Image (cartoon, rainbow over all chains, first blue to last red):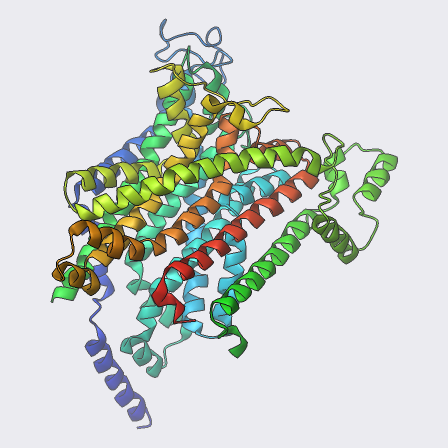
Length: 307
Length: 323
């Protein structure tokens, strides 16, 4: 019988939740991805990313030579069975190109994923706390954001070393504050809504409210932010390798390849040109996908406003 | 937190300056601590097979024989007096090499700003006035592509286009010789400045477009039109001044972003600024130089953000009342 009180308040709460859904349940939100696919730019972006990912994943399998095998004189032009000629050491450009994408892709994905999770957690906790914790967390984020991302990565690499995890952590830690800011901004209006108060009345735990109620309602902006952050992570990872700061100074890596062969752009351009184009297509692809999702989300908001 | 409010514009500026100083203080602690946390810098610099004598000498040189707080304040007071330490690579005071390089970098950033900000305002306004038409669509797609590309990729595509492969108009690298000023070699400045401008224009023009659209749909612009003012007067006297506020904010943030962008771009063009110096210092494990440049670049970043906030308040009348 003592359950009764709880049940009543639970019913009330559920009624409130039902009233309070100007906002659709999470199920309709995941439609966002599918709906954004109707836009031409999202399709183009997906094709570009898909192409580069396939190249990076299956490239190592089909590469005709080992990436560190000397197959000719340095800077030989295309010909003699070498489709794109040789690089500055006389290694096969095509093989190194096919081998060189996977590292960048994996490191960028992992660092972005860590940064997103961390940033989301910080941003949502800050927004939900609505007290001094919010101020402290966001000021701390400001301090990290006082440094350009590439600079923190450079300093970390110079002090700790060029190991993969150093670069991943440096990029994740610099991605998190930017994600946190967006997550907090998106979550604040949601928290003001009745249904969050209702879930509090139902006695849900903080973790459930933040993870189960708040998070699904900011999925839209977070997906846009995720693609944006992935674009930047790819850029920073590639740039570090381009600056000569990768795990393996002669490892096949698009950034490293560009650095090694930049000097011969006028005579044997392929060694630098292929990785430049691949990185350009990849980042343009992630950029287009992000923009497609952003436009779709804005469109959904407008429709809802008209209803 | 009452003291955080009030005081009008002056109060606001003072609060922002204090906040900026607080951020810089925290930044200096982080920079200092990050070099401390990683064990003995002297050992890191000299490597595993350092002799004890050399180790002790270097430890003394780096003030490592004092306690941590003492070391920090010694380093900080050095910074405040313009003494940035001694470069381990060149054995020269860090500030010696820094001056001319800082000037070279500032030349790049200012030129990029002078070109890209008016250009972005023009592009954004024009796109807003002719919304969803040909120009707007083309520009938004080009800007989206530009915004997605890493700066060094943009730089190299420009090099391929204008100096090595398609046209042969401009030098592929910009190694201003020591003792000369960057502006003595205008042809070498074109590609780096263009790259930086390309990095900033997408953001600023997008904000300008959004801001202009909002203003054009506002009541007072409609009122001005209904009064029978010419479209030109409506645009230049009523719309533009009100639309330009947010642009200051974004422009300054973009400039601050350039403080990071120059690192890679200067390296691409072999341009002797603080960005390429930072890369050299990182490669050489020249920790005093890395520390000094980190503080310097963060300081520029904080300063530009502060100027942005103040400028935004000054040009946006309706924000002033909220102070």
